[in-house]
Amino acid sequence: MKIALIGYGKMGKEIEKIALSRGHEIVCVIDMDNRQDFDSEAFRSADVAIEFTAPAVAYGNCKEAFKQGVKVVSGSTGWIAGHEDEMRRLCAEEGKTLFWSSNFSLGVAIFSAVNKYLAGIMNGFPNYEVSMVETHHIHKLDAPSGTAITLAEGIIENLDRKDKWVMGTLTAPDGTVTGTTQCAANELPVSAVRRGEVPGIHTIRYESEADSIIITHDAKNRKGFALGAVLAAEYTATHQGFLGMDDLFHF
Image (cartoon, rainbow, N blue to C red; front, side, top):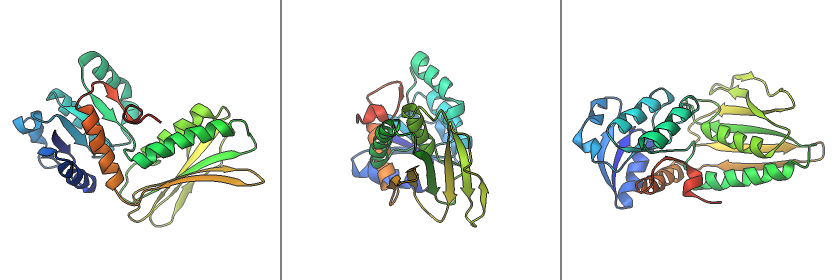
């Protein structure tokens, strides 16, 4: 498979290593200083482009790839909420293909399934209050993380007493804490911590007067995310539409 990389930071380089190890070819790499290469034969030759950049440019990157007739796997967070309807329309009506996920880790996919199942169980036990904390490296621009939002939506779908998530506290790299976890009974607080070079930790807590039930996913490095992105690209090369992890993994 021929792959174009959009974004060549730490994730882009890790994806490159795994793609090459699985026998794929990197035909084009686009970063901040060569965006003109979207309009190149090398980019157009790609079966799939894998896009890991920043919220401010991810939407434009996807549109540029679509213009060149290239399918996209995007792991950029913080942009899809404002553009999902358009992306779905482009996929349904104009034959474009976007595989988007807030997190490509197999472990997170399993964790997400466990999260939904647990929320369904806890629906019958209203004496437990639920909250979430996510911790990421200091370079992450969006808070809460896209993965935390996806997990929160999974809880809301299965827990009748919660119908929206709200931002809780934000702990900055210098330890400064802003915000609050105090919220309405129907709201799920999601707090964020920015610390060091943490790849990603997501903890969901159900608290009662008697005890606590806690589940956590703790990423050790970026390899799991990169492998998932390549697996998604392999799937996307032979499928069409607005795709996600539920299409790739059936738990």
